[in-house]
View 1: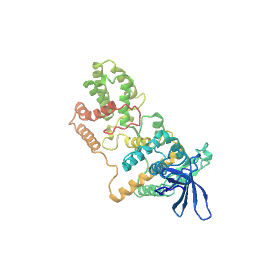
View 2: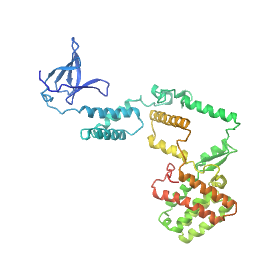
View 3: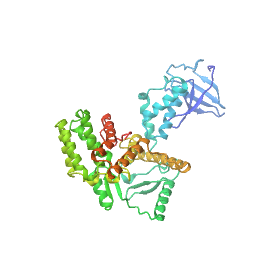
View 4: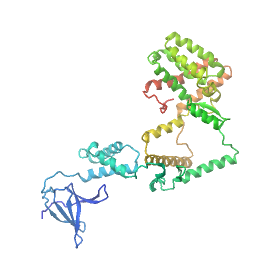
Length: 437
């Protein structure tokens, strides 16, 4: 029996759920329990026979272990307890946030380890342990169903993060899964009751959507009396997309060209009866700058002015200025948040986990707003200021204080803001939301 100066040890649980002992940065697994209650633990290295015997929480015997704690059979130590705890903390994070990238969770916990210990040199690099981390994440849920009929939602995914019922409908015949917490259903019922008491008919007067023909047709069919409007932001974004597609970005740096592009983006904000004259002026000015701009003018003329693709009543917003939002950026903002928190093409379990987290975030906001009587998502000052400029300019035009040219001048600064954002981002998709517009 060897004598080791410091006999302190720690108990850990392996990723397979087995108990283990960490002693001098070596790992030991239980070999046997003696009649007197003492336990013999053997080094987990398959070629090492070093053992420790523990009784009543203390090491009473060691075998094939040197005084400094190293083993007679020389082999590298596994990892220090604090490093092991760091790896364990990453796995806990994977359990808590299964939709988050594993590499991100690793990075967060290693930074925390470095802050607490002064150095992260001992923590295994991500490439060394990523396989085990990904395997651990996969082990947290049953296999992905291969058919709709075999879907069996795990118990922990049928409840909210607070433990309330969440899966309220699972129709195997219709292949429908429906999730909502009792509180969410209660809020919906309160809204319906409020509408009934106030005589509010839940029939939208106007609907704001993207420039997608299928969506336009579907909403028009189901809400025949509603005014279907296209999102102003997507109109502006499509103008810039055409500028890029037709190779006009460099030419658009010219001050006069930028002014006319702003006027194009402004078309949905003009009085309908002024659109033809305004567009004719834009074509004339753009053609004087460069003939290539006629390609852009031709597209806008076909798609919007001649109403070949989208009728003027769909994309013009003059009548709704000051009455309702002109963009669906709040919806796109939710979509953007979804993309940032949930991987592309998530599996079923990852998706359910995400909506669990989304439900929890929503309930936090509901409780805060109810208790504090203030919104958790206030409008940005700049957005309010821009809307006020629009409202005042519209009223001044209707009162005869502004002619078309002066009205355009008032609104042009708002359109320049869109151009600046589009020009500074390389993104070219409908998920992008300008933060400053």
